[in-house]
Amino acid sequence: MNKDFIKLTVPSRPDYVGVVRLTTSSIGSKIDFSIEEIEDIKVAIAEACINAMEKSETLNIEYELYKDKLIMFVENVTEKIDSFRKDVKEKELGILIIRSLMDEVEFTDKGIKMIKKIEDGIDG
Image (cartoon, rainbow, N blue to C red; front, side):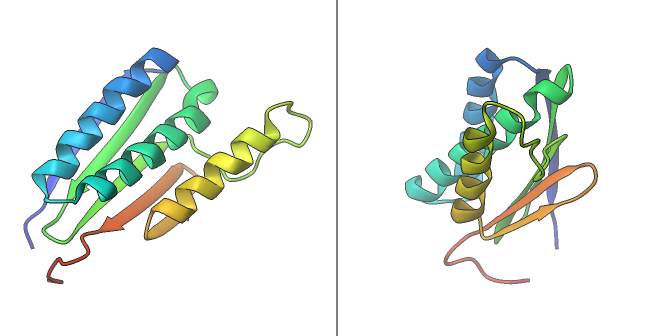
């Protein structure tokens, strides 16, 4: 199966999350996601970026585009949140949002892998 691979690196600052969201929206449109699905992936990628922001000077995002799905990987996203943080509830909510919007979510030692399948896509 053919796939396209895109890597995006932006400064790790809140004002660049919009750039990531716009890029993700364009990628979603290219592989024929519905408007609702594009909104879901934009919210999920933004939450992942917010989670990763304080751990690195850059946000590193990778996209793998297939005919029937989109795989997004964001470095430095963790599922474990230090309980002494004052924003622990916001971080937990962000992870919950990602899990609810994506079809598959996997945390690795390097970051988070999120998969969104095209509803009427053909497996292959």
